Length: 130
Image (cartoon, rainbow, N blue to C red; front, side, top):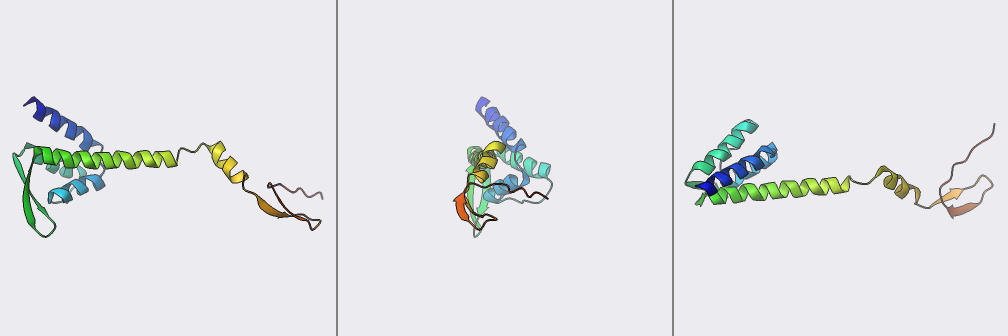
């Protein structure tokens, strides 16, 4: 009984952080309706955790049954994918502004000098005197 409470509270905690996309993905895997507001989707998934066996329809109307642990496993997989994707996004956007500027400055380009010389060198700023 204690394990069931832990399982349900763990799933509730994960579902609270889900976006509609993840909730619909879980419901699709369970063969259940994906219609409704976010809270409706969460409630529908939580109700499946209280059932002894969940009858699912996958693909071409092939029915199968999974228990609470199966529902929890689907929730856990969706949570893992979501958090992995978020951490990858954070990694990509974690470049410090100085590094981004430095990376763009360190590209060498051909510069045509007003005197006609073309040299591969670091970028420079040309100042005109009036």
